[in-house]
Image 1 (cartoon, rainbow, N blue to C red):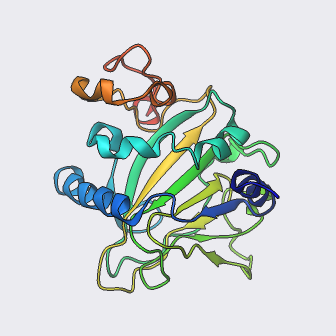
Image 2: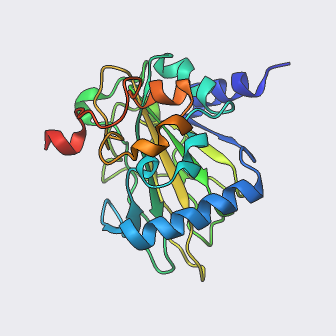
Length: 247
């Protein structure tokens, strides 16, 4: 009988995504949600990336409660299968969809010139800190689009097969970064909270550099694998290349 990891790999190969249910306990997810709400009060910004939402960037520098997602035993083996064991955590951010926020337009997270249907350079994890329901705007994904070679849907394409990632709090959506996806519209009466762990092959730069403002007092809270994934084996504070720096 196939293991959970083997099933997840097969589903990502075929569909471009998988859902691992209840990776975090409800109590763990609620604690992270409370921490995220406090981070949003201090560091939240308005995101307009293909749709309105509240955004909190570079969470490893804001609260060590998020460290356990970096190398979780149920997600990391899936990521390593596609990206190799030398992968990095390109960023750990949050997108908070508020009541009235509209659908995010469908897109791939990989630039057109880096699309490779046979070997993705990036995978994403969406950590659900609320139940993901249609009413609260659960993420939508389009099966098979990781092999399309297109960064987003053509304007004249009728999208007949849209899957909404419905799952209980603490679950994780893992998807090939080439898969078209987008947040749903929040028609509910409360915010929908999620963490986005964005992993990249080792030759790529960070999206958000965790060395920026990483509290030195937290360094010993990281285990060895987390330090590797953050390229922090030599300690925090050393400047590294990140998308934001390159711009």
